Length: 605
Image (cartoon, rainbow, N blue to C red; front, side, top):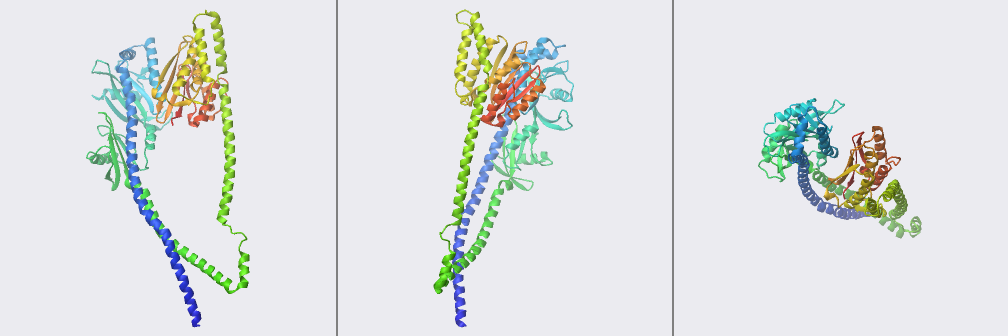
């Protein structure tokens, strides 16, 4: 009996030794990395969050300033346009005071409307533009409608009253609510006012105002914020709130509390501020303009360091989990090792039973996890090979489709041009003439187009080819149209697919200008908008009927090439979407008898 008790105590002692050793080993393996990496991760996370909010805050302030400066620049350009062109001012004053309007004044107003309509159509935030000159006919100029009319609506009367009651201010802003046409809802608009002066007069003669959709601008402002609870304020020099996304019920009091703290701090310097019992990271930026805005942003500290607190909680949980897991692993490992020792003892104690142990073992020692991994890897390799084959097949099909589309573009152009050259050669003498010019230009066009249509060329090379093509068309259609280029030179160095613009311009000539009785105008514009380049072609031709316009827009959205009269546009739309993605598809606007606008945007890498 004593011997049995002694044997049991010895076994328990051995099991305890195994358990203690296993527990210490597991604790070392699990807790040392956690205790080493955990505090470092928490400290580094706090530093990274601080650096991130600092960088984000400065970027947000500069982006806000850049956005507002764009609004300033638009109205500055309009002011300079009027003040530096006395003839335009005289024409405007004459039109405002004529009763009735003369034909010359109506043409002048129509030409000036194109300048402002270009701004309205290309800027997503501009809702409307108002121009007012002192007059006794109670008139106002609405460029979007392309006419001078009597002041009728409440908005137009408010505009005039604002001008008359503005005192000595030359430039100011205000926020108003505007009803959405055809709906009972309303939207917030930001109106920027600027007095107009003649060149040698200190007395204002009128005013221009740009009306911006504040809801659309707010959507853009929200994209600048890194944190959901980050708040921004845009205030003018008189501390009036131009815009804020604050959820406070009393924004004026909140701004007053913030402003008293700001005046003692440096500009573009992140500092801590207590507001409503919470700490915030705050910074501000003042516009360099005398009448500019002040941009303020602040973010709750608990929002900034949310990931740090979460990481700290995770670290503590890992510590306790590691200790608990060490006990569990030590327990199971001890039992497994102890059973293994008992099996060895059984084999040596009973040699006849050893055969049974060997029979239970597999013929080949193989790691089941390794076996599974090898099969998984094999399966993934087979699937990857099949995907590569499918992708290569789709890529070849896409290339063939794009080449087929390209070969469909403008077969009638060469035919018509050659016919024109033929009859021109019969009529002219053998000396240098328009026929030889057309042949030279046609040769340049063919050299440009004979290469790979999928290669990238610089925008300036594409414009050079386009100008050569238009030289031919001007001879074919003498005094039929005029080309005006509005190109940002900084955009001409970027790459674009060859022969993208020519089908659109050709469409403007054949379907817009050709059918027009008087001389037409085609405006070709290229400008940079953030991370994209905008291309637009505007003509004042016969326009497109509404039902036909709707059908074309549906084809562009569906990437359909089913069009007989506008095959150049539909094929170009497919090339754009295949090359740059669905967001680069052609967009089309037109009013029957007035204009047609085709534009698209490509990303800048």
